[in-house]
Image: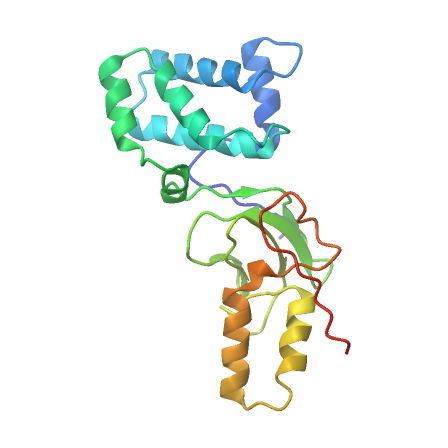
Length: 224
């Protein structure tokens, strides 16, 4: 394959979203989130969208906010602003009741993922990417590769492993597992790997771009 990308639940593509919104709104400069939300709500009303379609619109707006320069915008503010902009009290009430109280549940249930870097042709054994994780399950990108759990934003590495379902961990974690289990039997090694896999988001190499996330940073120095 030449390129692999993931889109779920929405026909919007994050990379083109801001440009599309600028054209639709007729602005020469980038629109604010308030303008975008108002515009999307107005369009939704004119098109007579269903609750499910409106929910997807909200998920798309939130993904857009996270992919834009103003990623600090609160997702709950976006959701509430969109709902409040719906000019139909009955529909507004139904929509509000159909959206879980927390943003995480709303977006997670919509299976929304935001990928900052697409996975291109496997010219190298490892290809790093940033991903905002939405579900508790692993995501299978292609055979032998999973994108592991992440509490916020995590760096994962993809490689074509021999055994499907084996998580591709960053190189420093693979080394940590190997060097820490040299004297252990197979069961203990498997248990150690599982522990690191389930807790890998608390680790970060000193060079990893984790400064803008809430993930705890550790310098992993195995001295081997």
